[in-house]
Image (cartoon, rainbow, N blue to C red; front, side):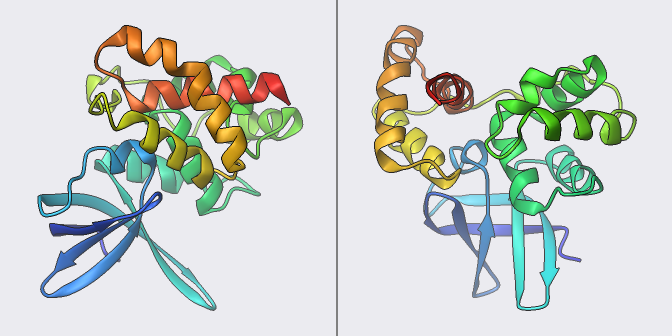
Length: 202
């Protein structure tokens, strides 16, 4: 297993970072919160999880080992594949997920695209005792994005989660007052607010 990749960031896309490792560009699927920490040309170290399928090898990257372990634990539930596990981590930090499962918070899970009421109930039953207790780590907090760049990052994150470009535009505008009021927009927090807006609209 590839436990981590380390090297300069060669390229960034809405859901992927390319990290140069020993002259080889490793494409790593990442959440918007993880991508927000990276800059092209700057060194990066990502904890990784390799998902092997019959027709593909996909490397998923995370800000730290806690995110990676949570990603892998989420997939022990029936019906949860890497894409859904990554979507859960795009919306909630590992500690927020632990709190949601400990409290039986169905609403927190249905905020994730692809999880309905029945799916949330099933996940709460299956994963309640697997994720462990919340650790209260501040390290999982979302990272501030440059004031001018949060719109593009948020839009790309929503499109990456499966929303239409028009829906993403509307959600970005809906959370703009919150972003401007904060002074230092945090993509993770804005993504959660945008998803709540989209869920109410559907």
